[in-house]
Image (cartoon, rainbow over all chains, first blue to last red; front, side):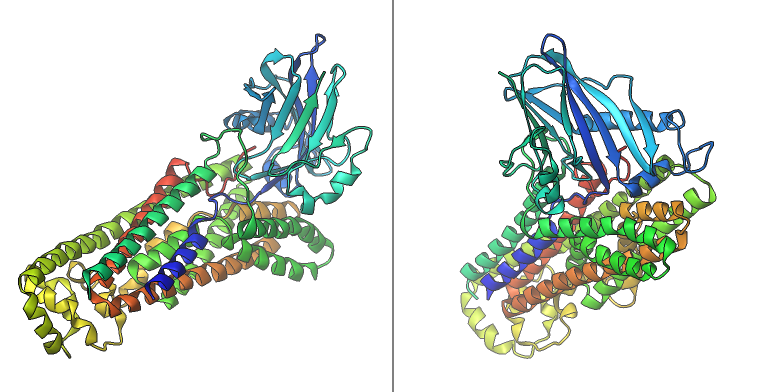
Length: 213
Length: 370
């Protein structure tokens, strides 16, 4: 009797409390990213283009002044872009890079960031530079929100590009969630562009893997 | 009963309380956006949690398409209500502090399941109302930006978390004192029992029909009465609450009777004040589509779904506590100790939740990232 009650209580309380205390995604980001290289073959940073889902795009643009209703110019969106970039700092721009297994610190984004608004979708463009450019044999960049408030997914076509890279091989690993949510994305990635790794295993993040000789 | 059995029960209670605290801590660690595991491996959301997360995300994503559809075709509004309802059910089943606080509150206060249902529905409806009020006033009337709404939510959030902590502290004060009283008096009774072991056997026989009130505190200091109390298991009082439900002499009137709703108001506000981020986004999106009232309907449906899940979980908590109460009845001495311990633990959990939420170690929901 005591044991059964203890088990019942334990089950109940686990049910109530053991769930991770973070919410489900309220923002969906479809991203395209470019890994930037300097002429001497060092990685200098990552350039992102993050498109928000239609609901969040509507939410974020609420109350913004626009000359033409429902259309926002880059200039009109500039204050919002500034807020975006500033608040992203707290979250490390959701971009975590490792070079040969060692974490690489990121610097603040360069000033050439902007928002555009097309088909009621808001897209944030910005570049996160490495604090110091590095030569990387094995480069891994994770893009994710540990609190899963933001759901990141790579765009279907050409989600990742290497810009100015020496002879390197690019892999894009999708998070496990994609297997049921956006499984199709896998097959839609052109074979010549990206060699999609199936070995994401326990990885929750969107991963960019670059192997350079 | 043997002291070994009582020790076992006490250990069980301790185990449960520890587990509560540990789970709370794990929760916090998992939720901590950039703690020690910054940039490291991801927490995995498998099994039930993963399923709930996937489901609510799925329903949430269906919302935008359905709202758009409702613009052209009015009947899509019905679909939207259905989806909102389903979203609410899954949303509340998933991570969130509301049901945890309500359940802990139910356990600590030994409320009935009916009250749990009322509290759940009231807080869910309040939650829907705050979302509608914020968007209605800020966005519709004032044309404010998302940032203004985000800041408003942040302030409400802080008030709500402070309220949670206050409720927890108050419960801990009441329940913790009752628990300590009981511990102390039990110790005295045990000492007494050791001295007069032969009396015990006799008291067994005599106590039949004795009033249950011996279980309570009004006899503090009279250790011999407590000795009787331990054997007072044979009374057949139907109303468990009077047997060990409340904090006795500490607050005779307030914790029983019609005051429960007044008392529950604090819990309703603590949980219901903070609007659901999803509801706010849906409302603003509806507004942008020129369908604000459809958004309002959807928000209430979400609230209804949320209320059903929270009420279900609160009922489970009440049931478990009732079961523990019946067991305690069978083993009076240590049993009450378990119950008191459980109540104290539940109060501590409420404080823990409130503190973690307030300090940002546990993230409930974020409205503004970008």
